Length: 480
Image 1: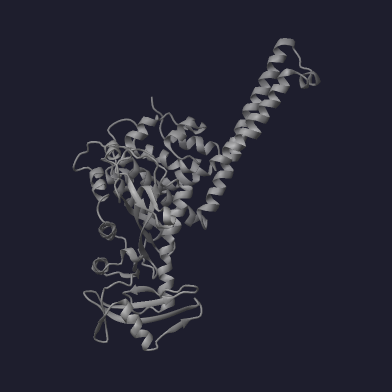
Image 2: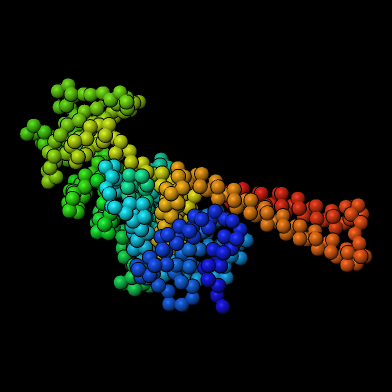
Protein backbone atom coordinates (compact mmCIF):
# COMPACT_ATOMS: atom_id res chain seq x y z
CA UNK A 1 0.00 0.00 0.00
CA UNK A 2 1.39 3.40 -0.99
CA UNK A 3 2.19 5.99 1.63
CA UNK A 4 0.59 9.41 1.63
CA UNK A 5 2.53 12.60 1.05
CA UNK A 6 1.72 13.34 4.70
CA UNK A 7 4.51 10.89 5.50
CA UNK A 8 7.02 13.30 3.95
CA UNK A 9 5.56 16.14 5.99
CA UNK A 10 5.77 14.10 9.21
CA UNK A 11 9.40 13.13 8.58
CA UNK A 12 10.39 16.72 7.93
CA UNK A 13 8.44 17.98 10.93
CA UNK A 14 9.92 15.38 13.28
CA UNK A 15 13.44 16.31 12.22
CA UNK A 16 12.85 20.03 12.62
CA UNK A 17 13.47 21.00 9.00
CA UNK A 18 12.82 24.59 8.06
CA UNK A 19 11.63 22.96 4.82
CA UNK A 20 8.49 22.02 6.71
CA UNK A 21 7.74 25.66 7.53
CA UNK A 22 8.61 26.90 4.09
CA UNK A 23 6.83 24.30 2.00
CA UNK A 24 4.11 22.51 3.93
CA UNK A 25 2.84 25.34 6.11
CA UNK A 26 2.84 27.81 3.22
CA UNK A 27 1.35 25.17 0.91
CA UNK A 28 -1.56 24.73 3.29
CA UNK A 29 -2.11 28.47 3.08
CA UNK A 30 -2.04 28.33 -0.72
CA UNK A 31 -4.32 25.23 -0.79
CA UNK A 32 -2.29 23.41 -3.43
CA UNK A 33 -4.58 20.39 -3.61
CA UNK A 34 -7.62 22.58 -4.23
CA UNK A 35 -5.78 24.63 -6.87
CA UNK A 36 -4.70 21.45 -8.70
CA UNK A 37 -8.29 20.24 -8.87
CA UNK A 38 -9.54 23.67 -9.90
CA UNK A 39 -7.26 23.95 -12.95
CA UNK A 40 -7.82 20.32 -14.00
CA UNK A 41 -4.62 18.71 -12.71
CA UNK A 42 -5.75 15.10 -12.44
CA UNK A 43 -4.12 11.68 -12.60
CA UNK A 44 -6.07 8.51 -13.30
CA UNK A 45 -4.23 6.29 -10.80
CA UNK A 46 -1.42 6.13 -8.25
CA UNK A 47 -0.18 9.19 -6.43
CA UNK A 48 -2.15 12.39 -6.91
CA UNK A 49 -0.69 15.27 -8.91
CA UNK A 50 -0.55 17.47 -5.78
CA UNK A 51 1.52 14.82 -3.94
CA UNK A 52 4.05 14.56 -6.75
CA UNK A 53 4.27 18.35 -7.20
CA UNK A 54 4.83 18.71 -3.47
CA UNK A 55 7.81 16.36 -3.68
CA UNK A 56 9.19 18.20 -6.74
CA UNK A 57 8.98 21.50 -4.88
CA UNK A 58 11.15 20.17 -2.05
CA UNK A 59 14.08 19.13 -4.27
CA UNK A 60 15.82 22.55 -4.45
CA UNK A 61 15.33 22.97 -0.69
CA UNK A 62 17.12 19.66 -0.21
CA UNK A 63 19.91 21.05 -2.42
CA UNK A 64 19.11 18.46 -5.11
CA UNK A 65 19.30 19.12 -8.84
CA UNK A 66 17.09 16.37 -10.24
CA UNK A 67 14.74 13.44 -9.64
CA UNK A 68 17.67 11.06 -10.12
CA UNK A 69 19.72 12.92 -7.51
CA UNK A 70 16.86 12.55 -5.02
CA UNK A 71 16.73 8.77 -5.42
CA UNK A 72 20.49 8.53 -4.99
CA UNK A 73 20.41 10.55 -1.77
CA UNK A 74 19.44 9.65 1.77
CA UNK A 75 16.29 11.76 1.37
CA UNK A 76 14.60 9.02 -0.67
CA UNK A 77 13.53 7.34 2.58
CA UNK A 78 10.95 10.08 3.22
CA UNK A 79 8.59 8.54 0.65
CA UNK A 80 7.70 5.21 -0.92
CA UNK A 81 7.01 6.97 -4.23
CA UNK A 82 8.98 5.58 -7.16
CA UNK A 83 10.70 7.77 -9.72
CA UNK A 84 8.45 6.49 -12.54
CA UNK A 85 5.47 8.24 -10.94
CA UNK A 86 7.30 11.56 -11.12
CA UNK A 87 8.49 11.06 -14.68
CA UNK A 88 4.98 10.12 -15.84
CA UNK A 89 3.61 13.39 -14.49
CA UNK A 90 6.41 15.52 -15.94
CA UNK A 91 6.12 13.88 -19.37
CA UNK A 92 2.33 14.10 -19.54
CA UNK A 93 1.34 16.62 -22.24
CA UNK A 94 -2.19 16.95 -20.81
CA UNK A 95 -1.12 18.67 -17.59
CA UNK A 96 -2.21 22.37 -17.47
CA UNK A 97 1.02 23.78 -16.02
CA UNK A 98 0.28 27.32 -17.26
CA UNK A 99 -3.09 27.43 -15.53
CA UNK A 100 -1.54 26.17 -12.28
CA UNK A 101 1.17 28.86 -12.32
CA UNK A 102 -1.39 31.63 -12.90
CA UNK A 103 -3.59 30.22 -10.14
CA UNK A 104 -0.62 30.19 -7.74
CA UNK A 105 0.28 33.80 -8.55
CA UNK A 106 -3.35 34.82 -8.19
CA UNK A 107 -3.55 33.14 -4.79
CA UNK A 108 -0.42 35.04 -3.71
CA UNK A 109 -2.10 38.35 -4.56
CA UNK A 110 -5.30 37.39 -2.74
CA UNK A 111 -3.26 36.63 0.38
CA UNK A 112 -1.09 39.77 0.40
CA UNK A 113 -3.47 42.23 -1.30
CA UNK A 114 -7.08 41.19 -0.57
CA UNK A 115 -8.40 44.68 -1.37
CA UNK A 116 -6.81 44.52 -4.85
CA UNK A 117 -5.13 47.91 -4.52
CA UNK A 118 -3.01 49.00 -7.48
CA UNK A 119 0.30 50.47 -6.33
CA UNK A 120 1.63 53.54 -8.12
CA UNK A 121 4.77 51.63 -9.09
CA UNK A 122 3.10 48.29 -9.91
CA UNK A 123 4.25 46.86 -13.21
CA UNK A 124 4.26 43.93 -15.59
CA UNK A 125 7.80 43.06 -16.68
CA UNK A 126 8.71 41.01 -19.75
CA UNK A 127 12.20 39.70 -20.45
CA UNK A 128 14.00 36.55 -21.54
CA UNK A 129 16.92 34.50 -20.31
CA UNK A 130 19.03 31.71 -21.79
CA UNK A 131 18.65 28.13 -20.53
CA UNK A 132 21.74 26.22 -21.63
CA UNK A 133 21.48 22.47 -22.28
CA UNK A 134 24.03 19.78 -23.06
CA UNK A 135 22.05 17.19 -25.06
CA UNK A 136 21.46 17.54 -28.79
CA UNK A 137 18.63 15.02 -28.60
CA UNK A 138 16.40 17.19 -26.40
CA UNK A 139 13.12 17.87 -28.13
CA UNK A 140 12.96 21.32 -29.86
CA UNK A 141 16.55 22.12 -28.81
CA UNK A 142 18.32 24.78 -30.88
CA UNK A 143 21.19 27.23 -30.89
CA UNK A 144 20.25 30.41 -29.03
CA UNK A 145 22.17 33.64 -28.72
CA UNK A 146 23.18 34.76 -25.24
CA UNK A 147 24.21 38.42 -25.38
CA UNK A 148 25.80 38.15 -21.92
CA UNK A 149 28.34 35.63 -23.26
CA UNK A 150 29.70 38.06 -25.86
CA UNK A 151 31.53 36.51 -28.82
CA UNK A 152 30.81 33.00 -27.60
CA UNK A 153 27.14 33.84 -27.38
CA UNK A 154 25.69 30.87 -29.29
CA UNK A 155 24.62 28.13 -26.89
CA UNK A 156 22.64 24.95 -27.14
CA UNK A 157 19.37 25.41 -25.28
CA UNK A 158 16.19 27.47 -25.10
CA UNK A 159 15.26 31.10 -24.65
CA UNK A 160 12.90 31.42 -21.70
CA UNK A 161 10.52 34.36 -22.15
CA UNK A 162 8.92 35.25 -18.81
CA UNK A 163 6.14 37.61 -17.78
CA UNK A 164 6.50 38.84 -14.20
CA UNK A 165 4.34 40.99 -11.96
CA UNK A 166 5.66 43.54 -9.46
CA UNK A 167 2.92 44.56 -7.03
CA UNK A 168 4.88 47.35 -5.38
CA UNK A 169 6.72 45.08 -2.93
CA UNK A 170 7.25 41.63 -4.45
CA UNK A 171 8.05 40.23 -7.87
CA UNK A 172 6.44 36.98 -9.01
CA UNK A 173 6.46 35.08 -12.32
CA UNK A 174 3.06 34.76 -13.99
CA UNK A 175 3.73 33.01 -17.28
CA UNK A 176 6.52 31.86 -19.60
CA UNK A 177 7.25 30.28 -22.96
CA UNK A 178 10.33 28.40 -24.18
CA UNK A 179 11.68 29.44 -27.59
CA UNK A 180 13.90 27.87 -30.21
CA UNK A 181 16.06 30.08 -32.47
CA UNK A 182 18.58 28.57 -34.88
CA UNK A 183 18.01 24.86 -35.64
CA UNK A 184 20.84 22.35 -35.41
CA UNK A 185 23.01 22.58 -38.54
CA UNK A 186 23.43 18.89 -39.36
CA UNK A 187 20.41 16.97 -40.65
CA UNK A 188 21.63 13.89 -38.77
CA UNK A 189 21.49 15.76 -35.48
CA UNK A 190 18.00 17.07 -36.23
CA UNK A 191 16.78 13.53 -36.95
CA UNK A 192 18.22 12.31 -33.66
CA UNK A 193 16.15 14.81 -31.67
CA UNK A 194 13.49 13.26 -29.47
CA UNK A 195 9.94 13.23 -30.88
CA UNK A 196 6.66 11.90 -29.53
CA UNK A 197 3.04 11.76 -30.61
CA UNK A 198 0.71 14.13 -28.79
CA UNK A 199 -3.00 14.84 -28.73
CA UNK A 200 -3.47 17.88 -31.03
CA UNK A 201 -5.70 19.52 -28.40
CA UNK A 202 -3.31 18.99 -25.49
CA UNK A 203 -1.46 21.68 -23.56
CA UNK A 204 1.85 20.17 -24.66
CA UNK A 205 1.10 20.74 -28.36
CA UNK A 206 0.19 24.37 -27.67
CA UNK A 207 3.48 24.92 -25.82
CA UNK A 208 5.46 23.44 -28.71
CA UNK A 209 3.72 25.76 -31.17
CA UNK A 210 4.72 28.72 -28.99
CA UNK A 211 8.32 27.58 -29.26
CA UNK A 212 8.39 28.84 -32.87
CA UNK A 213 6.27 32.00 -32.45
CA UNK A 214 7.95 35.39 -32.06
CA UNK A 215 8.67 36.50 -28.51
CA UNK A 216 6.78 39.76 -29.07
CA UNK A 217 3.61 37.84 -30.02
CA UNK A 218 3.97 35.48 -27.05
CA UNK A 219 4.67 38.40 -24.73
CA UNK A 220 1.43 40.11 -25.76
CA UNK A 221 -0.52 36.86 -25.39
CA UNK A 222 0.84 36.41 -21.87
CA UNK A 223 -0.13 39.97 -20.97
CA UNK A 224 -3.66 39.40 -22.28
CA UNK A 225 -4.01 36.22 -20.21
CA UNK A 226 -2.78 37.98 -17.07
CA UNK A 227 -5.20 40.90 -17.50
CA UNK A 228 -8.03 38.44 -18.16
CA UNK A 229 -7.16 36.66 -14.89
CA UNK A 230 -7.60 39.92 -12.99
CA UNK A 231 -4.00 41.14 -12.60
CA UNK A 232 -3.77 44.93 -12.72
CA UNK A 233 -0.72 47.19 -12.94
CA UNK A 234 -0.01 50.79 -13.81
CA UNK A 235 2.97 50.14 -16.09
CA UNK A 236 4.44 47.63 -18.51
CA UNK A 237 8.26 47.62 -18.57
CA UNK A 238 10.34 46.16 -21.40
CA UNK A 239 13.73 46.68 -22.98
CA UNK A 240 14.35 47.95 -26.49
CA UNK A 241 13.95 44.49 -28.03
CA UNK A 242 10.18 44.56 -27.40
CA UNK A 243 9.53 48.25 -28.04
CA UNK A 244 8.11 48.00 -31.55
CA UNK A 245 5.29 50.31 -32.61
CA UNK A 246 2.87 47.36 -32.77
CA UNK A 247 3.78 46.19 -29.26
CA UNK A 248 3.32 49.64 -27.69
CA UNK A 249 0.03 50.13 -29.52
CA UNK A 250 -1.26 46.70 -28.42
CA UNK A 251 -0.31 47.28 -24.76
CA UNK A 252 -2.11 50.64 -24.74
CA UNK A 253 -5.25 48.88 -25.93
CA UNK A 254 -5.31 46.23 -23.18
CA UNK A 255 -7.92 46.32 -20.42
CA UNK A 256 -10.59 48.80 -19.46
CA UNK A 257 -8.00 51.12 -17.93
CA UNK A 258 -5.04 51.28 -20.36
CA UNK A 259 -1.62 50.72 -18.84
CA UNK A 260 1.33 52.99 -19.50
CA UNK A 261 4.45 51.54 -21.05
CA UNK A 262 8.02 52.59 -20.30
CA UNK A 263 10.70 51.07 -22.49
CA UNK A 264 14.09 51.50 -24.03
CA UNK A 265 13.85 52.38 -27.73
CA UNK A 266 16.27 51.88 -30.58
CA UNK A 267 17.28 54.97 -32.51
CA UNK A 268 15.88 53.52 -35.74
CA UNK A 269 13.88 54.98 -38.62
CA UNK A 270 10.51 55.22 -36.88
CA UNK A 271 9.05 58.74 -37.08
CA UNK A 272 7.85 61.10 -34.36
CA UNK A 273 5.96 64.35 -34.91
CA UNK A 274 7.66 67.36 -33.31
CA UNK A 275 6.50 70.89 -34.10
CA UNK A 276 4.84 69.66 -37.29
CA UNK A 277 7.90 67.80 -38.58
CA UNK A 278 8.25 64.03 -38.99
CA UNK A 279 11.63 63.15 -37.52
CA UNK A 280 13.39 59.93 -36.60
CA UNK A 281 15.32 59.67 -33.31
CA UNK A 282 18.68 60.87 -34.68
CA UNK A 283 17.11 63.83 -36.46
CA UNK A 284 15.11 64.74 -33.35
CA UNK A 285 18.25 64.64 -31.17
CA UNK A 286 20.03 66.98 -33.60
CA UNK A 287 17.10 69.44 -33.44
CA UNK A 288 17.02 69.34 -29.62
CA UNK A 289 20.75 70.01 -29.46
CA UNK A 290 20.38 72.98 -31.80
CA UNK A 291 17.61 74.37 -29.59
CA UNK A 292 19.91 74.17 -26.57
CA UNK A 293 17.45 72.23 -24.40
CA UNK A 294 19.98 69.97 -22.73
CA UNK A 295 19.43 69.38 -19.00
CA UNK A 296 21.55 67.85 -16.29
CA UNK A 297 20.48 65.51 -13.51
CA UNK A 298 22.89 65.89 -10.60
CA UNK A 299 21.55 62.87 -8.73
CA UNK A 300 22.25 60.54 -11.66
CA UNK A 301 25.11 62.61 -13.07
CA UNK A 302 23.34 62.40 -16.40
CA UNK A 303 22.92 64.76 -19.32
CA UNK A 304 19.54 64.47 -21.02
CA UNK A 305 16.86 65.91 -23.26
CA UNK A 306 13.17 65.28 -22.67
CA UNK A 307 10.46 66.12 -25.14
CA UNK A 308 6.80 65.34 -25.75
CA UNK A 309 6.07 64.18 -29.29
CA UNK A 310 3.20 62.61 -31.18
CA UNK A 311 3.65 58.94 -32.06
CA UNK A 312 1.38 57.87 -34.91
CA UNK A 313 -1.47 55.60 -33.77
CA UNK A 314 -0.47 55.90 -30.10
CA UNK A 315 -0.75 59.60 -29.26
CA UNK A 316 1.40 61.77 -27.04
CA UNK A 317 4.52 60.14 -25.63
CA UNK A 318 7.55 61.52 -23.83
CA UNK A 319 11.04 60.73 -25.12
CA UNK A 320 14.16 60.88 -22.95
CA UNK A 321 17.59 61.08 -24.62
CA UNK A 322 20.11 60.23 -21.90
CA UNK A 323 23.89 60.22 -21.81
CA UNK A 324 25.06 58.40 -18.72
CA UNK A 325 28.50 58.81 -17.08
CA UNK A 326 31.41 57.28 -19.04
CA UNK A 327 29.20 56.57 -22.06
CA UNK A 328 29.59 58.24 -25.44
CA UNK A 329 26.27 57.17 -26.93
CA UNK A 330 22.90 58.68 -26.17
CA UNK A 331 20.28 56.18 -24.99
CA UNK A 332 16.63 56.67 -25.76
CA UNK A 333 13.67 55.87 -23.49
CA UNK A 334 9.96 56.24 -24.17
CA UNK A 335 7.08 56.70 -21.74
CA UNK A 336 3.40 56.98 -22.56
CA UNK A 337 2.97 58.63 -19.14
CA UNK A 338 3.94 62.18 -20.15
CA UNK A 339 3.69 63.47 -16.56
CA UNK A 340 6.92 61.75 -15.53
CA UNK A 341 10.19 63.63 -15.23
CA UNK A 342 13.48 61.87 -15.87
CA UNK A 343 14.08 60.80 -12.25
CA UNK A 344 10.55 59.43 -11.80
CA UNK A 345 10.76 57.61 -15.11
CA UNK A 346 14.12 56.05 -14.22
CA UNK A 347 12.90 54.97 -10.78
CA UNK A 348 9.98 53.12 -12.35
CA UNK A 349 12.03 51.71 -15.23
CA UNK A 350 14.58 50.34 -12.71
CA UNK A 351 11.82 48.02 -11.45
CA UNK A 352 12.55 46.04 -14.61
CA UNK A 353 15.73 44.92 -12.86
CA UNK A 354 13.61 42.78 -10.51
CA UNK A 355 13.19 40.21 -13.27
CA UNK A 356 16.98 39.99 -13.69
CA UNK A 357 17.29 39.35 -9.95
CA UNK A 358 14.55 36.74 -10.27
CA UNK A 359 16.42 34.90 -13.06
CA UNK A 360 19.64 34.95 -11.04
CA UNK A 361 18.00 33.62 -7.88
CA UNK A 362 15.95 31.01 -9.73
CA UNK A 363 19.05 29.66 -11.46
CA UNK A 364 21.29 29.80 -8.41
CA UNK A 365 18.93 28.45 -5.77
CA UNK A 366 15.98 26.78 -7.52
CA UNK A 367 18.00 24.99 -10.25
CA UNK A 368 16.16 26.70 -13.11
CA UNK A 369 17.44 25.41 -16.45
CA UNK A 370 19.12 22.28 -15.07
CA UNK A 371 16.55 19.81 -16.45
CA UNK A 372 18.18 17.56 -19.07
CA UNK A 373 15.10 15.50 -19.97
CA UNK A 374 14.62 14.91 -23.68
CA UNK A 375 10.85 15.43 -23.40
CA UNK A 376 9.71 19.02 -24.01
CA UNK A 377 6.77 18.49 -21.64
CA UNK A 378 9.26 17.71 -18.86
CA UNK A 379 11.12 20.96 -19.62
CA UNK A 380 7.85 22.89 -19.21
CA UNK A 381 7.10 21.03 -15.96
CA UNK A 382 10.58 21.80 -14.59
CA UNK A 383 10.37 25.54 -15.24
CA UNK A 384 6.85 25.68 -13.80
CA UNK A 385 7.80 23.93 -10.55
CA UNK A 386 10.76 26.31 -10.17
CA UNK A 387 8.38 29.25 -10.58
CA UNK A 388 5.81 27.76 -8.18
CA UNK A 389 8.50 27.33 -5.54
CA UNK A 390 9.66 30.91 -6.10
CA UNK A 391 6.11 32.16 -5.40
CA UNK A 392 5.94 30.09 -2.21
CA UNK A 393 9.31 31.45 -1.10
CA UNK A 394 8.25 34.99 -2.03
CA UNK A 395 5.26 34.65 0.28
CA UNK A 396 7.37 33.11 3.06
CA UNK A 397 9.96 35.82 2.58
CA UNK A 398 7.33 38.56 2.67
CA UNK A 399 5.68 37.44 5.92
CA UNK A 400 9.02 36.62 7.59
CA UNK A 401 10.97 39.70 6.43
CA UNK A 402 13.72 37.91 4.49
CA UNK A 403 15.27 40.41 2.09
CA UNK A 404 16.52 37.83 -0.41
CA UNK A 405 16.85 34.11 -1.03
CA UNK A 406 20.49 34.24 0.10
CA UNK A 407 19.63 34.42 3.80
CA UNK A 408 16.77 31.98 3.44
CA UNK A 409 18.88 29.30 1.74
CA UNK A 410 21.78 29.88 4.13
CA UNK A 411 19.45 28.96 6.99
CA UNK A 412 18.14 25.91 5.11
CA UNK A 413 21.68 24.72 4.41
CA UNK A 414 22.71 25.15 8.05
CA UNK A 415 19.75 23.09 9.22
CA UNK A 416 20.44 20.38 6.62
CA UNK A 417 24.07 20.14 7.76
CA UNK A 418 23.08 20.08 11.42
CA UNK A 419 20.49 17.34 10.91
CA UNK A 420 22.67 15.18 8.67
CA UNK A 421 25.59 15.36 11.10
CA UNK A 422 23.35 14.57 14.06
CA UNK A 423 21.86 11.53 12.30
CA UNK A 424 25.27 10.18 11.28
CA UNK A 425 26.62 10.72 14.82
CA UNK A 426 23.69 8.83 16.30
CA UNK A 427 24.29 5.91 13.89
CA UNK A 428 27.90 5.74 15.08
CA UNK A 429 26.83 5.84 18.72
CA UNK A 430 24.40 3.01 18.02
CA UNK A 431 27.21 0.94 16.54
CA UNK A 432 29.39 1.72 19.57
CA UNK A 433 26.62 0.61 21.92
CA UNK A 434 26.20 -2.60 19.95
CA UNK A 435 29.91 -3.39 20.38
CA UNK A 436 29.62 -2.80 24.13
CA UNK A 437 26.47 -4.93 24.34
CA UNK A 438 28.20 -7.75 22.47
CA UNK A 439 31.14 -7.54 24.87
CA UNK A 440 28.86 -7.72 27.89
CA UNK A 441 26.97 -10.64 26.40
CA UNK A 442 30.20 -12.62 25.95
CA UNK A 443 32.04 -11.92 29.21
CA UNK A 444 29.46 -10.37 31.51
CA UNK A 445 31.45 -7.14 31.91
CA UNK A 446 33.51 -4.64 29.86
CA UNK A 447 36.92 -3.26 30.87
CA UNK A 448 36.83 0.32 29.53
CA UNK A 449 40.65 0.72 29.48
CA UNK A 450 41.02 -2.58 27.70
CA UNK A 451 38.26 -1.64 25.26
CA UNK A 452 40.09 1.61 24.37
CA UNK A 453 43.06 -0.41 23.15
CA UNK A 454 40.91 -2.95 21.30
CA UNK A 455 40.44 -3.46 17.59
CA UNK A 456 36.79 -2.51 17.88
CA UNK A 457 37.67 0.89 19.36
CA UNK A 458 40.16 1.63 16.57
CA UNK A 459 37.55 0.57 14.00
CA UNK A 460 34.97 2.93 15.50
CA UNK A 461 37.43 5.82 15.57
CA UNK A 462 38.29 5.26 11.91
CA UNK A 463 34.59 4.98 11.05
CA UNK A 464 33.89 8.26 12.84
CA UNK A 465 36.71 10.15 11.13
CA UNK A 466 36.09 8.84 7.63
CA UNK A 467 32.31 8.71 7.52
CA UNK A 468 31.42 11.63 9.73
CA UNK A 469 34.07 14.32 9.72
CA UNK A 470 35.41 13.96 6.21
CA UNK A 471 32.85 12.50 3.81
CA UNK A 472 29.75 14.04 5.33
CA UNK A 473 31.09 17.58 5.46
CA UNK A 474 32.60 17.25 2.00
CA UNK A 475 29.33 15.95 0.51
CA UNK A 476 27.24 18.69 2.11
CA UNK A 477 29.61 21.44 1.03
CA UNK A 478 29.60 20.06 -2.51
CA UNK A 479 25.80 19.97 -2.48
CA UNK A 480 25.67 23.54 -1.23
